[in-house]
Image 1 (cartoon, helix red, strand yellow):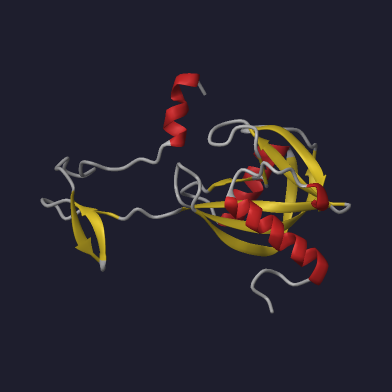
Image 2: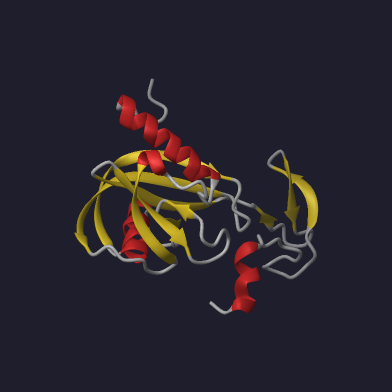
Length: 185
């Protein structure tokens, strides 16, 4: 990524013109909400969240975190995760992202929980986190990670990149103590 491209990653895109007919979009009520709509062809811009998937990997009581290479929040830590491609499932996304960011090959154990990410300036994300086991590969930072490290759950860095990851860390600490997944009573 070139330094002059950084703005593309940190600003959410807002439509002004219809992507179908190029008319100016106007704010109108659709499906009980105000939405941008095309007055000519009836295109409605549904500003939906973007799905992302990742995993919590535990080795000897330590969880794997990655340090971010690219904006937003360069240098902050998070669980290895990333946005889904159009043609993949959440599990395929998770496996791919872990391999790309950490060099590790994983096997999904189970769904951990689903989080809503409202503090990423690029988009509102739906973060799907799995519990997974390492079955191969070599731990090394890759793709958009500058560092990868297994960190004691009691020594998590203070600079966790996103609120959804901070919530997941708190939920995972409770899970380790109680054996109950988030949402279980």
